[in-house]
Amino acid sequence: MSAIPQDEPKEERPNLRVMTSRRVAIILFNLGGPDNQDAVRPFLFNLFNDKAIISLPQPLRFLLAKLISGSREELAKANYALMGGGSPILPETLKQAEALEQEMSKRVANVTFKCFPAMRYWKPFTKDAAKAAEAWGATDAILLPLYPQFSTTTTASSLREWKRQSRIPCSTICCYPAGKAFAETHADAILQAWREGGSPPNPRVLFSAHGLPQRVVDRGDPYQWQVEQSVAAVRKFLPAEWDIRTCYQSRVGPLKWIGPSTEEEIERAGHDKTGVIVSPIAFVTEHVETLVELDIEYAQLARRLDVPFYLRAAAPGAAPRFIDALAEQAERALSAPGKVQAENGARICPAQFGYCAQGSGR
Image (tube, rainbow, N blue to C red; front, side):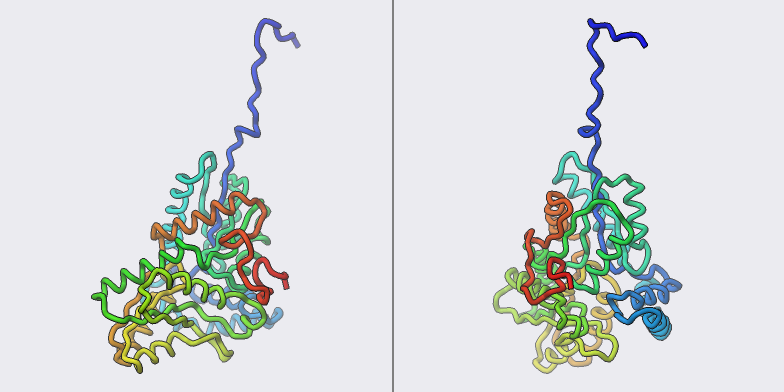
C-alpha cells in the first residue's frame, strides 16, 4: 500500500455520531375498535381476554372472554352499524398522528418524528406499531397514551404490552389530565356546543367519563381522581355560574361501578328541568361511546325526560389546542430519555394511589 503524500491533506472521515440523525417514533396508544362487522367479535374477545380487564387466571379468562364476546356480538354489531359498520377511532387517530408530526417538526430541529398508532384490542396492534417503528429506523421512542387519565385498565395495560413487544429505548408520558392546553380544548368544545345550541341560559355541564368497577379504584387505581382533576381544570375556563357535574358511563356487568352514572345525572336534570351539555372528558376521539351512547341513547333518554335541551361537546380529535397539548408532552418526554413522567415532570397522584405509574408498583 503506497503512503499518502505528505503535501496532500488527509481526507477527513465523517463523524458518524454527528451525522446519524435522531429518528423518534411517537407511539400513540388507544383501545382501538373494529373496522368492520366481522371484526366485532374478535375485538370484544381481545378486550375481555386482557388480564387488566378481567383478572381471572387462564384458562378461565379465555373461556369467559369467549362467552362474553359471543353474547354481546349482535348488540355491538348493531351499534357499530349506526356508525357505518365500524369504529372511526383509527381514522381519527391517524389525523391526530399527522397533525402531531407536523407540530413536532416545527418545535424541534434536527430530529425526525413519526407517529405510530398502537391499538390494544384491534389493528394496528401494539406489536404492529413496534415492528413498523423498528422498520422505520427509530433510534428511540416516546410512549404517549391517548388516555389523558391514567388507569391500570388502559394506560398500564398498553405500556405492558409495548414492553413485551419492543426493545426500542423509550421515554413515557403516563398521564396529562389537567394541563392548560388540554383543559382549554375541552372548554372550547363545550362553549362551541353551547353557542351552536343557541346559547341557552344556565346550562348544566355533565363531564362524562368511561366508568370503572369500584373495586378497581378501591385498590389504588388513580383514574377517578385524575378525571376529577380534568374537570377542575376545564372548570376554570367556563362561566363561573354554570353548574358542573362529573359522571360515568358505559357500565357493564353486575359489579358496583363508580358513580354517579351519566344516566342518573340526565334523570336528575329532567327532574330539575335543567338543560345539559355533555362533555366526553376521558375520550379524545369519537367512537361508539360518544357517537352511539351519548348522541343516540342518552339523547333519547333526555327527550323522554323532557330535559329542556341536550347538547354534546365534541371530543378533542385533531383540534389545534389538543395537538399542542400532545406536543408539549412529547417535548417533555424527548428531554428525559428512559423516564416515566406525568404532565408536570413529577408524580401528580396522592400517595394512596399505589397503582399510579410512578407509585409503589404493586
